[in-house]
Amino acid sequence: IFEQVVPAELEALLVKHPQIDDAVVIGIPDKDDPDNQYPRAYVVRQPNADITENDVIQYVKGTVLSSDIKLMRNVACQQ
Image (cartoon, rainbow, N blue to C red; front, side, top):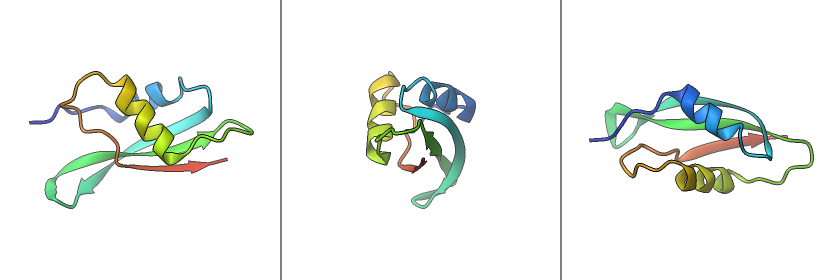
């Protein structure tokens, strides 16, 4: 069973990253389990930042301590 993460908690975590200016997290239906959702982040980079979608996913994985939390599988970055 997975622990639910409130989008605002992930948003607060994301904006602590020095290359992220702003972030919004929404729930996306899980195609493998339509009754559940996983978080998707939309990230605005700081000016001249080069953080990638994979960098964001790895940052969250490295920061969130519980292995039971549904982690982001999808990130969209914009400058």
